[in-house]
Image (cartoon, rainbow over all chains, first blue to last red; front, side):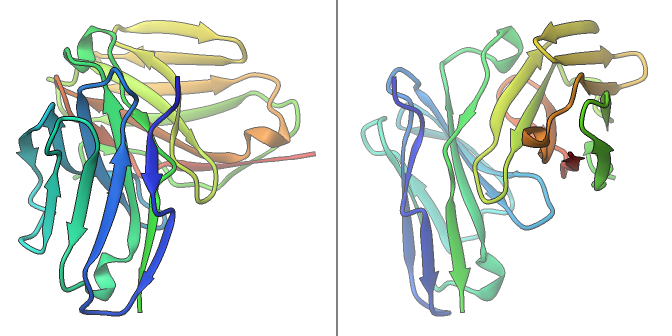
Length: 117
Length: 109
C-alpha cells in the first residue's frame, strides 16, 4: 500500500510561467485534497474532489489556479502566470469516502515545493 | 481570528521531558481533532485522531480534548531528539480539516 505521491518535489520557475503539479492518491481513496503551506504557517485548504467531481474551492484558489481529477484517480494542480506570492509548498492529501467525523482521516504526500523567481 | 489557533513556539525541552502542546478552536460545529507531525520540508504525518472529549493514548502520545472549552492538547512522554518537529493540530466539520499554524518543538539531548 503506497502512500500519496506528488511530483515534482521541487520546482523553480520564473515569474509569469505556468507550472503543473501531479498527485497520485492512495489507491482505494476516492477523496483528494489540495492544500498550500507557506513558511511558518499551517496548511491552508485550496480544493477537494470526490472521485472526479470538484466539490469545494477555497477563495484562495484564484482564477490563475485550476485543479482537475479527470478519471477520479490522479489529480493535477496548474498555476498560470505564476507570481512570487505563489511560492509555497503544495500538499496533496487523500481519504476514503465518508465523513471525517466517522473515524475517517486524511493522509498527506510529501508536498511539491514551488519557488517563483 | 483563525478557527484553529496554536502558539508557534519554539518550545525547547530536554530529552526525557513530558511535552504539552496545546490548541484552541472556535467553531462549535467542529467534530473531530487530529494531530500531525511535520519534519522540515516534509509532508505532515498523522499522529492522533479523535472525535470525542477525553483522552486517547497511543504509545508515548496522548491526545486530550475538552469540547466544553474548545481546547485540544497533545502530550508526549519521554521526549526524544527525534521528536523535534512542528506539530500541527487540525479540526473541522464533515469533510475539510482546518489546521493551526503549528508549534515548533525542539528536544535537546
